[in-house]
Amino acid sequence: MNKKLIINLSLALLLVLTFSVSSMAAEYTINAGIGLNDKSAQYESLEFFKELVEENSDGQIEVNLYHSSQLGDDREMMEALQMGVQEMTCPSTAPIAPFVNGFKVFDLPFLFPTHEAADYVLDGPVGQDLLKQLEDEGLVGLAFWENGYRQLTNSRNAVESPEDVEGLKVRTMENPMHLAAWREMGANPTPMAFGELFSAMQQGVVDGQENPWGTIYLQNFYEVQEYTTDTGHVYSPFVLMMSKKFYDKLPGDLQQVVRDAAQEAKHHNRRINREMNAAYLEDLKEVMTVTILTPEQKAAFQEAVQPVYEQFEDEIGAELIKDVQAQVEEFQAQQ
Ligand code: TK8
Image (cartoon, rainbow, N blue to C red; front, side):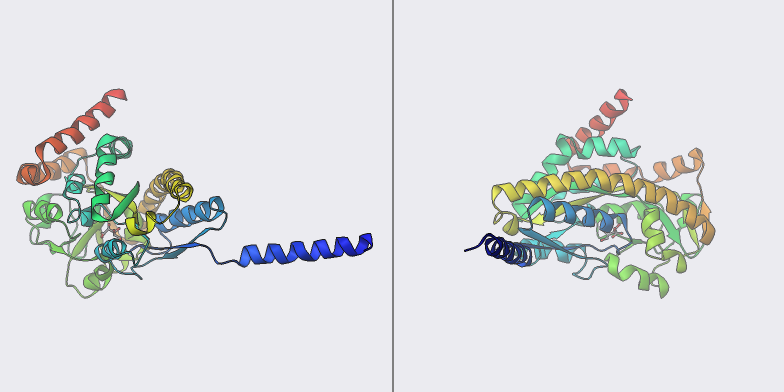
């Protein structure tokens, strides 16, 4: 057989092999759903995670992303992971509390003085132990990503003091800590899934809500809310999590690919989330009446919600609260 023919046959064989490998369906498919829309830092970070996983698994894993509660709200998606009918989600810690009670600790108001203090605790022994506890509930907690400091918006009046929220119908996440904190301030809180929130504000079912600046801007809440105040009353982490039924099917090397990608995307997520939240506050100043509290005004909110610590000490566990506070002090002492 002449040399030219051998080369042509080899090239043809190479083309066939290349095509067949790339078009070969991935062995594992991850369907990941979130509540925020596709402009959020959370979604952008999931795209970053997707690229890492597909590349580092050599195409053995494909990741499909779904935003804006397309697959359900936070609680529904966590239940889908438990059943093994969805592979990943990334809820705020507040709706995780019914699954693992200890996550309530992160809903204590004014717990973390800075983003960096939050990182230190979440990536430290206390946070990692809580992620581990998810496994008993059929969930694999891969990493703490960031939702951010929660800020109050409402359609009724400017808010400079707890007295200004008297009787305000505030939507909260489905978590008793949040309900208690707003009741302490004299508001009238209502728990509600995130996906129902915009229409509830539009129809006046609730007067207000609280979320980080990026969510307020990117979900167009300013279209139905006039006033916002930088209360920063709770720091909300997200938890990137996977169905344990799915995770356990992955061979060890692909489990490591997923874990490594979750960690690398965590750092990316925290960086862009902080940049975006700061930037969107400036944009919100163009479309809302923004109240920036003085330190004295913010202290009045801290004082108003302090009773929540005592109210929930037994339910959360005094030891866990003390451990988190000790970790925060340990971090502050290093600054
Ligand atoms: C999105 C929610 C949202 C949270 C809320 O799925 O419910 O207000 O802050 O980010 O997790």
